[in-house]
Length: 400
Image 1 (cartoon, rainbow, N blue to C red):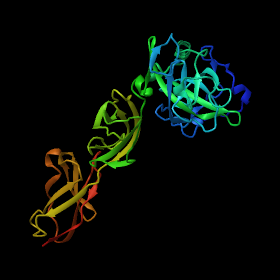
Image 2: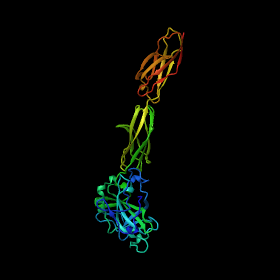
Image 3: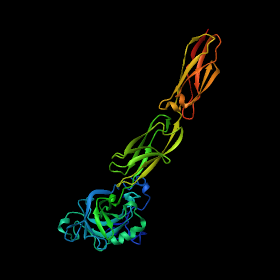
Image 4: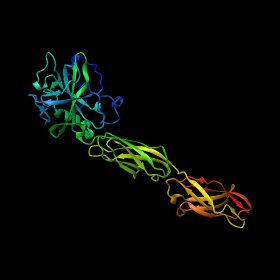
């Protein structure tokens, strides 16, 4: 947590709890209570974003004889001591224990918490007596502070999302010269009924929260496949699938890689021309919650190419000329090339025919007889909702 410590040392070395709105318990002054989105390290809504104040130093619980304790009952309270495995902040002399309720809907730095013990001196003259195994380490006594029964009852109303029953114990150290450290040693416990057990982290409370975002081309052509890149944050292992949908229609699906990034190809015929709102949905796994993002893409009509081939480039005026016209479009099946062909002699339309799906984009057209002379023949494809219009090159026809 990023906090501002302005209170005086005399307030640190005592229990010094301020009034709180959490179930009537006292809230620790170092607890962050502002808007987590103002923190530079916070990413909206992600409980998977770690608190940079959390050190790599583990926190462990011990009984009065110095034996490690990893489970117990809620009503029985915490073990006698909480101790860090190593230095939390150099030159500190005092320690306090805080308990925070893990919440899957917010980042760790914004989890609500209370100071659960007083402040003990663990180093130098006046240090409280502790079992031999804790010598030289930061520690604090838990007797006389809040028990887990008090804490679980108080935090229940705040809600924990999928991290229900998970609490983080944070041991902070302090000194007269430097005040209370931002950095802390950490341990997690899971409360189930009247029992608690030390666990590896908040994921032990259920599937972790995820967020899905996506990128895709802003514009694509009908008939041309495009790729949606999905990024799912919060996942820690491969598994689950990502589905690209328009409304309830599934366009493409692909299994998610362990790095949470996957490229999903979408077929060129999946969307007709127009602007489409896509949903990119991660289906979730036993360890990761489902999530979804959105992306808009504009599909334009396919570019077509029209060609013609005269049956003969030189004919007598007594014969009707013929031209075979054909239209193609990349990625578009021939049956979709419907519309019409209009044949021009110069700037004058001389024949128009309908192009049906059965023609497959190709048609032989008999033209009206032409007068003697040289004629400039071209074919224009009308286009349709999926395929753009196009015009063939000009072909020279000599009529004798």
